[in-house]
Image 1: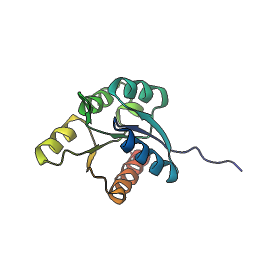
Image 2: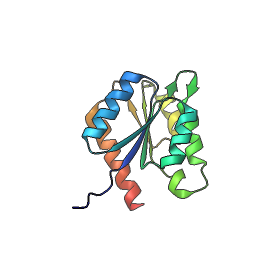
Image 3: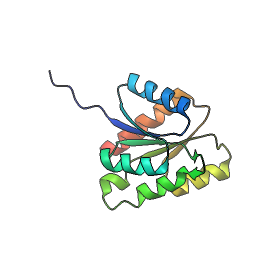
Amino acid sequence: MDQKPKTRILVVEDNPMNLEMLAEWLEIGGYQVDSAEDLASARAKFQAVCPALVLLDIRLGAEDGADFARWVRAQPEPQSSQVPVIAVTAHALRDEQDRILEAGCNSVVCKPVDLRALKEEIERWLAVGKTG
C-alpha cells in the first residue's frame, strides 16, 4: 500500500521547549517536521526541503523572524516565495502584528499558543496553497 508523502512544515523556534512541543504536536497530526533555531539555519533548511508551510517565531534571540518572512517572499521561484508563513509569537500588540504581516507573514498566532486556533490556521493556509 502506497502512503502519500507527509506534508512538510518548517518550525523556526529558538526555545527548545516550544520547539519540542510544536514538533511533537505536528508529528502526531501527521506532518513531517523540519526545524531551525536561527535565521541562517532556517534559510538553509528552507532551501533544502522547500516546506509546504513555515511556523515562525518572531523573536529569535537577537534576530528578527520578520527578516525570514521577507527573505521567503523575495525568493525567485513562485513555489518558494508563496509558501505560507504563520508567525507564532508573544507579540500581541496590533502595531507589532501589522509589522509582522507587512513583512510577509500570512497570519499571526499569539503565544501562549491555542493549538486549536493554530491547527485552523495551518489547515487554512495549506488549503490555499493547494488551490492557488
